[in-house]
Length: 161
Image 1 (cartoon, rainbow, N blue to C red):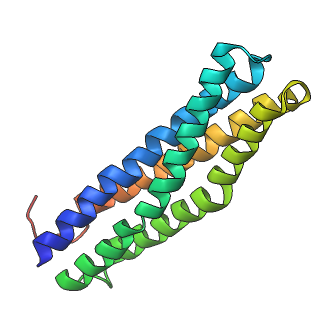
Image 2 (cartoon, one colour):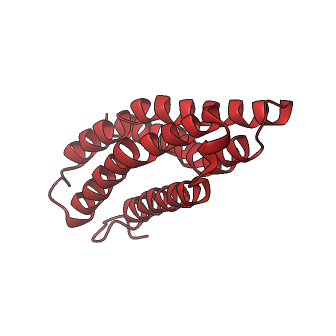
């Protein structure tokens, strides 16, 4: 049973969190292009459509990503490691990353999409919004990188690796 739980946990992390990491990282570029290109040209429409798609990927996979901590907790309980510091640290970092996604990254993506639809005056603050969103996404990705390292290294692990 432990192998099944761990397999679902790892696959969900790769598919859900990985998809969010890539889509969220690409989003500012295309949203910025959609706003700064101005007019109603084909290129602006393409950039706006890509940005909207990337935002949709982030939203959908954020919900699907709930499987990751659920199966992670189940795996940890099965292995009897729920009280280990490395797992508690991983759970805290996961909660922080989830909070950032829900309360900062997704809302900022929505604001940038609104700028893309707004046209001319929407470009005010565009560079700052894109930079802020890029920074938030970078922190989100860094948090997940630390979680992955903790899951692999597992201080006190009995695997001998």
